[in-house]
Image (cartoon, rainbow, N blue to C red):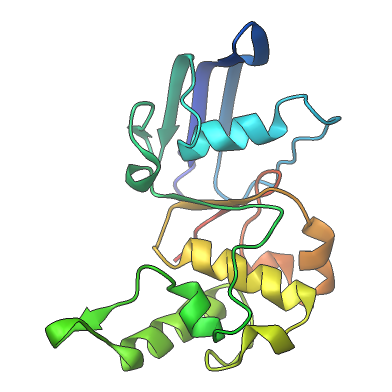
Length: 193
């Protein structure tokens, strides 16, 4: 079993002007770990996730994902997804359309490849232990299922790791067994394809 870190922070510091949001963080996150960052508002939890995702550039130190230094890469080059507290979902679209919004597989002449969209959506949902029909409209889903669809959308790009900003209780109440995918942060879900 490979015990190499999925993500590793070495001497990572992030400042906003004169305010130090995260100072000299050293952390190795390994497969199968459950790790939560807890603290009051403003203590740096979201800043840490945004730095790992590449949404905020750290001022010092390095961030590695899958053993690769991604410190200076943009978010798209980090093989990392993030699900924020407010869902990025379209209630008038289907589960599948939400999972692939903006990155839909296409075929000749730019036409959407619906068979691939539905097949890959079903695979992504299945990998999270979620039993939903990809053709179901979002507006009819429970809050827990909506958050799982948002997680599926972040996972659909086959990222190494996906984080959720909050709402673990929603996952626990959704009927999805946490053992179906390893959990590691506030909350971080490494991919296990």
